[in-house]
Image (cartoon, rainbow, N blue to C red; front, side, top):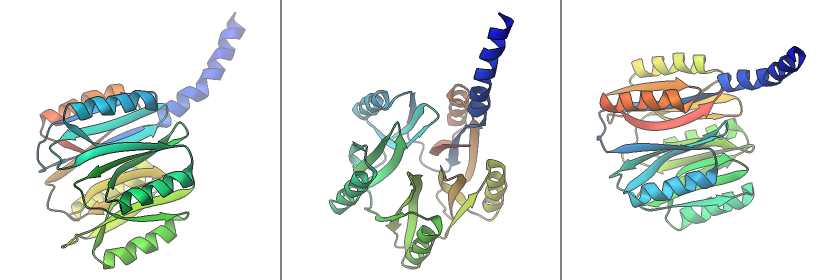
Length: 259
């Protein structure tokens, strides 16, 4: 009996280490309109799809979506100015990329892209500026295109990495703010860099974990007065943190997950 219990403990040990290493990050800002927000967490995409449709019926728009370590998580907000949100799911990467390009050509802006359970999910909306799309298989090649588009007055909306490709969307601004894109190997390194950027007057406007790196976009914007984040390996603890932040006047800017 003891030997059997020992074998079960050995089998479960890697699972415990892996789950403890995984991180969910929720980042916030103060100074932005205090529109009503909500979040949903599910195990499977079908459950999340139902949750998204329920929130749409309640007048919310989806502003962030991520999948990591057996969980889908989404953040919703009211009065965003968007209209006609929709989602599309594809199992093949190239088919999904073709869909992205077609939606943009038709005037629909990708709000978020996520990958999990073998499917790509795109959230689209009207009523937002339609971005330019960058897809590259190397971060440095994407970075060079981003720098070139910064010179033309574009700003990063979001950057994602899935299935060997970096995806960036960039929006043309009349008075484009200064941006910088940073990546680090560990969260501890990213936290130190983020604290430095905050002291320099930048704010975190996008965050993603891809190809073993934390990648963040920092923007010199006057929309925010202050920023903060919460980090945990499970949504039980994060849920309590989020409600506390909302009561203190913070609003969620985005969510991400990584290691």
